[in-house]
Length: 344
Image (cartoon, rainbow, N blue to C red; front, side, top):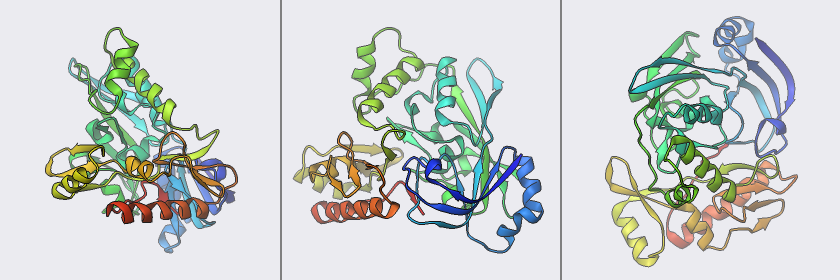
């Protein structure tokens, strides 16, 4: 089904809740229906070179002004098991499905791999675009393949994980396939063999505090507890989760910073011995930003990576706060930080 809304107010479609209007919103519940629609007059905006973008659940998007173009939004939900043996299970989920519903199903079935990614506000489609991650795990670790609509040929295609060019909050869908592909579904590969990953932050002690048998569901419970203690509910306080990325820097630069700031947290980078990741939240907190407000936008009191809308903030107010923080981090630590949020 295709539904079109003209002059759509967007505050209810983004977790920041900032006010903006789009010229047109196209909601689609079937990849085949969308392809047929775009082949006809409905796809004129693509052929005419008009401005357009794809919106997931709006959990990683900040509108700073009215959007003078078309927004494509998937309402296709649902998931199904498409393969299972003694070693692993493949679950296919439609792009508009709530990401945490996928994690809940996997952990309830005793499948390993997704549990550390619990409670991340995201859609299935965005999980692949953004390569979402938390507690030492990224979406790429469990993605088998991504199905998408080629927006140039309007054919439905599939790309295996190894060709998705996944990196830290990066994928081919942000680069070579940006503006050329619309994700319709993602297939995830979950393990039947226990594979807990607990050595990140306070995850292990939180799991141990719960006690009992170590299961994916137990780890999920611990992750949810930790996130709830640090991160604000977007329904109460507008936000997009972590606003900034953690920089990945050359090892010598990180070692110099560590000499100056021994307490600075650093993390290894998978597949790279020459680079290390440092904690942006620690740097922001070290500068005294945690809990500070500028107008109607603020840094969350319990997590310095999170910027919040205190009520009525505009997208420009939030970005002005972000830019000020970026400047001060660069001045103090000589490190450039960048937004994880998609700013439009």
